[in-house]
Length: 441
Image 1 (cartoon, helix red, strand yellow):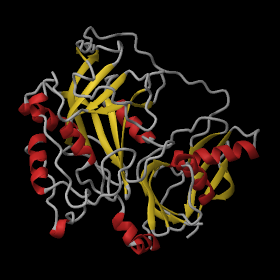
Image 2: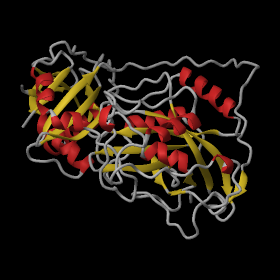
Image 3: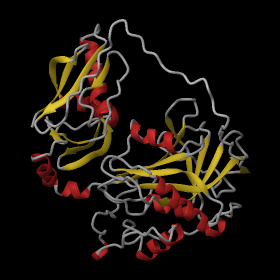
Image 4: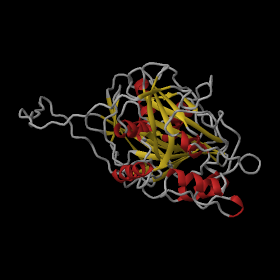
């Protein structure tokens, strides 16, 4: 199947030629992943989420078939899934296209584009209304203001504490792939939260996530830094988890509030966590969709986002917070694992648990008993699926383990189902509906 990118010249957006899609995808993912295998096959599932905003730059671009502005992308090489994630059409197609057009047509300021090919006939072409020469936009301004105003009260100052008081061994180095030591936030992960993030069985088919809860302190040994003690992670209920992305709903927060009240430990929402179903790279952490969710939902300057990359070799944990240098995005922040046996003055010390020994040869899922203890500690409403026969995970879940990755815990394969049966992906792409396509070299 041949999928192409059609260009439209402004101002009338008349067809102006086509470009092959695969070279644009390769350029985009070489930037994200560092390299793309020569035999890579790209499978895109376009999702009906409107994105017709103009892409700034020179030249500026607009997607004229923007009714499907997002895509769930799977990259397969040698029968294995090497990448699986949701991305915007603007990120993976428009940006590399913009670079090429700037080189080839430096005097052209604006283009339209759209995906065309077999199976995409249902994507409607919508041309923007052209600007009328000499026209002036008039915006109505309300001069009358309401007498009632709402303003947000500042957070109370947190109690002081130190890394040692929160259970971090003396001299323990900060963890992270590219963590910024000057970050305004540092994260201390207590054992039960560590087990939930690094040992529990996550889905290898869709992204999963939830809330990070715990306590907030002012770092007494480093003025200006906030220390977040993560005491537990709670799988979110009533979420929008799907192939496209992980999202929260109002019901998710209502149910979390009930759980925090029942726990009665003075914990607050420190942020959120979610999974990525591909290997971590230094170039790619949170996606633009993830950043948008964080900045629009978790607005406290100290709230953080935990990212767990799942691969067949293990899993990598990273934490992100507001950019300490004033940028609009998120930057990786340092974190530490609390010492399981250190005496601490934290209010959660009485709830500390020991990590259990791993089954078998040091890999695998937690034991049934530990899963029960863990879920009972987190919430009475959220339960892990029990392992299937012979220790295998239940349907739709993965629970294997691989070597330790980046000093983290062993983990389950994230894409073993697809990797073991690549022909299943081929069958899906052979007769795609209107919003699916497969792009191959």
